[in-house]
Image (cartoon, rainbow, N blue to C red; front, side):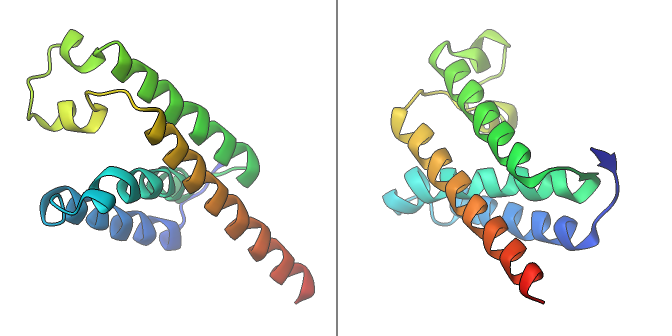
Length: 129
């Protein structure tokens, strides 16, 4: 692991973040998008955010993001946002979340699987070049 800024990943982080904001604000009434797609995309946001500043093994990063996502979901089971004193509707309350769901963990897994497939595809293409 080494500190190294990547403009490519930083710009991707901004784009994915804007997509997440769009999902949370304008597309919130489309159930599939709000309930599932946002959770698949959020692991990609975490991936690009880390890759923006740190050069790290892709596979280890993906596993770490999945574990972190599961930890956050488990914290939701214990109502961590309320216990930390965040008010419903506040930014941190929304970011941390407030309801545990096994489906969310499945969505994180799907997002991580898509990231893994992307990383593998990229490494194969680089090997063939």
